[in-house]
Image (cartoon, rainbow, N blue to C red; front, side, top):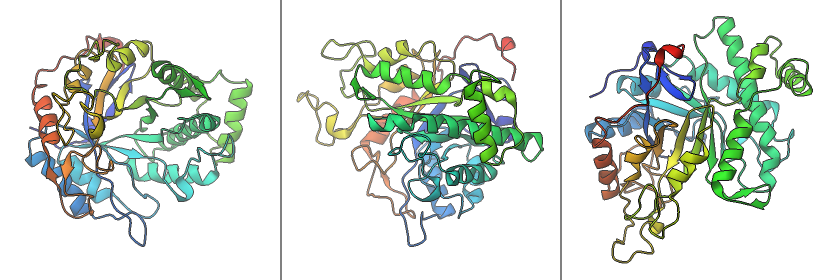
Length: 394
């Protein structure tokens, strides 16, 4: 069962968890939305057809509450019809705050400060103007796998600066009573083993990335704060809250993970006896100060049970057994996941067949989808973190 999403259902970040305004803990059970095609104008958009995807998932009785979108163009298109329709269906939306081309690009190939052009801020500001009025827009992704090789780490300061400036911009909108809330900002990191050219275990890389993007500025009067203030002025934000300089640039830390590639996988150990990737990440991020999610979750079909001929099937159909662990054993630190994907993962991650999606017609569910649904169906009585809610101001 689901209920339409209203202003009272807006999701906020408090401490290391997500909450609704009524004080109840919110956990993301999401699916990556299919990638729309492009036409001569740009991103193809058909609100009715996009909503048909969500209606199909509801008709299939999938126990989900969120979709993550990757390709939108808020400078040219108004997505209100789709977003409002999603709210009626009880679906939250994670939106992109960057683009693959044009003014919304955060250019990972350029070092700071050249990776952050004024057009990027203008893109993000216009996107926020459109999305903030919708209570079911859960968060915005300010970067997806930006720092995933030696050269791209030189662009890391641009991610921090962009996130910080968007927060200052939202503060201004709230102060001027143009909007009623701010939008949680998300960074989606790759589960990678490369940092600045140095090879080390992926957990260490992820932790260093999280630490870098969640540590606050050093305060008023410091070089860092002065640079940030100058950037804010450059981007037209003459009025901003000094308190923002003590806060994390991002609000939710996401990890795109492709592990869990055996049907004999265990939470604690891999079939070869090595420590399981999920429990290893959980241990590494225990001290993280913001909610953590799997912003993409799913093993490539070609790798699932690849080295286990007794269990391997031709399609590489995933069992999705990790769902139970993310929302139970990892629940004190993790706030959910986005299963990758309805369609758009180059066939190696798709849960539906008949694609690529044409932007108009729904696709057909595969056994991979039914396995995912089965795991969600087992979560009706999922445990929630033991929190002293009176200690967390909502």
